[in-house]
Image (cartoon, rainbow, N blue to C red):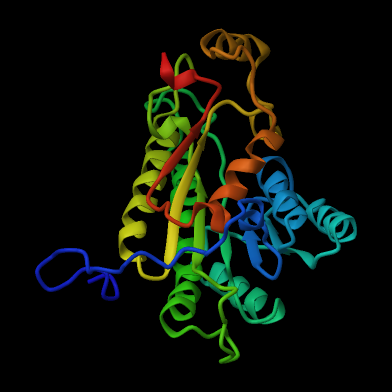
Length: 296
């Protein structure tokens, strides 16, 4: 049973929907003031853009990184630019104990509550055909892209459940009307929907499909206390794709109706929408942002 979300007859209980905000105006729904967010893989690229967007909207943000030490500088810049609390944490998301420990530390340090968790950490498959690639590389891709997302969800979900069902923060303080529910967002990919060509990346495709299905499943399990959604970007011009030769990128652009790759900043609005009360009736959704690639 999903904490009372599904009744003894196997049907959804009435009134499951988390109460949406009462507002006559739309812009206040996008405010993140007073909220705490964690964003993984936020030293650069999509994760950094998301952290900047949340901070601009008023949230305090903890950014996680694994190898990009410049994340410490980026966090200081965000704090100075937007006047919010922002701190960088070195976390290996493939180790559950480390994920839980970092989450616990951040919730305690950031005032006792967690509102948003964005599981964005990921790596590409770089070794071509599945039969040619190393098994160790397969494990790296699945461990970071799928297992790490699950670990993040598990760590965040424990806080979302207590906050939603008990209405209290870590310190036992009532959350009040300013808190609606938790929001977990995972960065998936159009590769979780289609088989990209001409690159060969079976492991990556499978991992991202798993991320989408994981989020859909958790949306049902957590329906009484948190919303769970994923975002599936298409081709984004970030450092993670620097290993791709220019000839391959030209082929990509030929297959994208908009004729170009996206910039990470073009995803800010989508992540802010899912994180904020503007999407209060949206859970179990996957939003494709690909310049029309999967349309044709």
